[in-house]
Length: 148
Image (cartoon, rainbow, N blue to C red; front, side, top):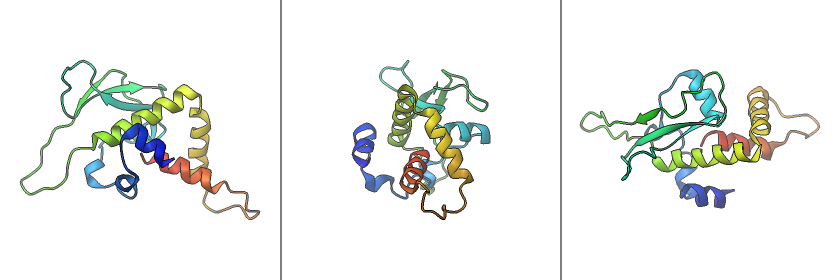
């Protein structure tokens, strides 16, 4: 799986592990937008209308219109409003590119419903099955993708 992530996102595993939720990679959005982003219903792709591209300027690409998804085609530009000395950065474009690649693959392959079910199961799973039947690797893999 790490090979696929590095191939599509250009991100070495060492840059992902434990760093997805660091301040440099935070996005502020409504709760509904956040849930639909986590489900890969939408993503941010580099703004295709500007050549050369404007740094940190993206277009919303909606794969599955659900409650909470923003309007397809909306332009989003991240601006740096840091105070001097603040080390928080704008979201890493590599992580946004990886999220967009995963979202596209999930929806083109028809795996969206399967993954949505596992994400729901993951949220509802509080303990492991006593018979050892909990699909740990599947849950962990889907959970890892959900954090990208």
